[in-house]
Length: 423
RNA sequence: GGAGAGAUGGCAGAGCGGUCGAAUGCGGCGGUCUUGAAAACCGUUGAAGUGAAAGCUUCCGGGGGUUCGAAUCCCUCUCUCUCCGCCA
View 1 (tube, rainbow, N blue to C red):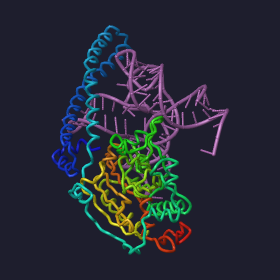
View 2 (cartoon, protein in one colour; view 1 turned 180 degrees about the vertical axis):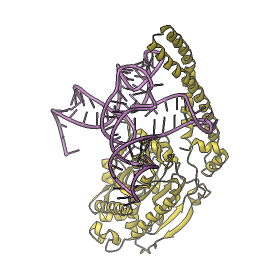
View 3 (cartoon, rainbow, N blue to C red; view 1 turned 90 degrees about the horizontal axis):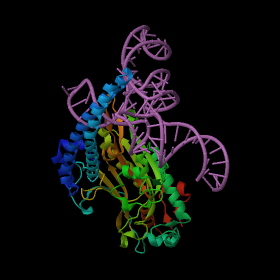
View 4 (cartoon, rainbow, N blue to C red; view 1 turned 135 degrees about the vertical axis):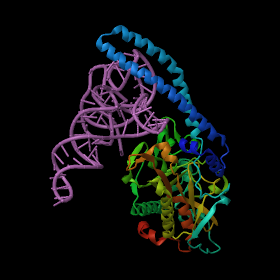
């Protein structure tokens, strides 16, 4: 959620920045400012009258204790008059605050100055590529064939148990998932992230805090009986750990990591994009989240990018890093880097991580603040990224490392998996 | 699921319907003392909105009500604890 103060200060700049994101309803900026002015005026009216009521009430108390009943009754009548005039102001104020809030949550975060112009993924800025693309023999096959060959995921039975997009990992496939999760968590905790294992269902307030509600309601699985949502990413419960908290400056930075399954309805997906592991409804992911001093958030973003890059390098996967253009960024993000790995048999790039700085957008909604030495409280900046999403990593590992003998695993996984090769 | 108790400031813990935004203790911060530290003593110490400031308003789990006035009374929801039942 954008801060009203920022919008008031320079509405022109806000509109300009929203245009970079191709946000159409620019008039909402003026609506917010108008509503906020109205809110202020009503609040002032309310407070002035309320102040009269309060002080009169105090006087009534004093009169009563002195036994001056008549004078007290007179005051009471006066107060009744004020209270009557208070009523419409109060309801008007409540309505104004409500529509201000509703308007505010419809506005996306402002992109940072580094965000490139553009509308589609084709306009994303290539930051760098790394790793070496393998030269596969002509008889190489995509991962869904390898999955069958080694019998490591049973999609059909997953469909039988739940529905399409709910893979059933089996045997070495299940073990490789466990190995990857274990390795990713170890990698993150070694870098100073504290490990969490959060609830997989969240309530409405939590889903609202990270911005899944009210906008992306249709993308989450909902449990109507209890008003819970299955999490689409660990970001949701983990960032909300600090909702409504005032931290000390010395608490920052807060670094958290969590493994969770992620549940996404992916309504509207179809075709070859959903083949194999490319897009599924339930998948495993290890997430990193940081809450930091605003002055440092962009340096932290860079360090998170390097962190994820090292992880990909250690897996020996060819990757590229993209800085997302205004049109391809998420609602809440100010700057996002996407990581894609090269899936050699499909011959396409697969997104495996998205690292973003949300600046104060999420923290403003969640009221995550810290106290400066001089006693002022201000909003933290929040950042998160995947390190990493498992299915597409698995797809690339299978495709890129296939051989006559089996899937040759990167060295770092040998210990975790208990073997150098998956056969 | 049944019965009971409770939810107050960073923590602990008081609080008669009327100067209660809230005693007290601990912790934090500042100071006195000290070569330095500790101890002791003194002072200070919640958040939000608005304002140049003084101030004013709101907040004692959430929501609603009674009253001139609610942390205090009533209703309701949520959560926590104790006991019972069920159970991985």
